Length: 249
Image 1 (cartoon, rainbow, N blue to C red):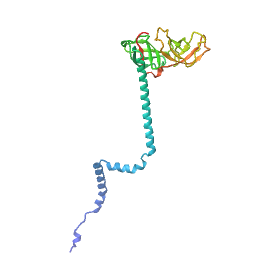
Image 2: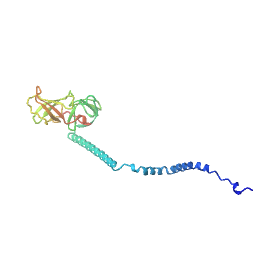
Image 3: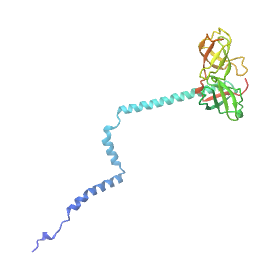
Image 4: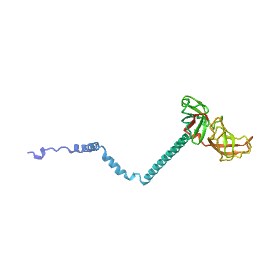
């Protein structure tokens, strides 16, 4: 007679144990998909918290932000000053026309520049070109929409000037550098560093009494007459807008 227990067969446990890891992987993948990885982000944040930036990094960021804001403020103030100077220059005479600097000679930085106004706007050769600070140069040629300006620093530039303190005329001669040379005709002119140089009141080519620059140094031993180096008041390398006097002086 066969015992009752011998007729029953239990399911094998080996197959269940082998499938269990795969069931866990499937459950984990399903959880990630359903939660869109939220719990992984939370877990990463929890374990990485000791490595988060501390107070020193926060101070560096605040300092960098303050530096950026200060730089922006200084740039805005500089732009504001430049625009105010342009407006004041334009308000001084109704005969001035604003023009942007659109080109400079790469190999002749101190010689010429091109501005974005031309004969269609009334420009012509010989017109004086001014910038914040004073005289910059003269128009030498024009097209319908552009004009070429010879700077006071160009080696071909010759401008009659006046030193008001000593009441002497002189000739400002371009040297191809950022500082032209002031040559006198008379001896013992008494010019000294700091004297202001303007266009000559007797000039027939340029408007009189335009600020040109300041005497930087004087050579009393020059032959046949004293010479002086002049620091121009309108820096050509920093000018991006000019004013052109469109009528004859």
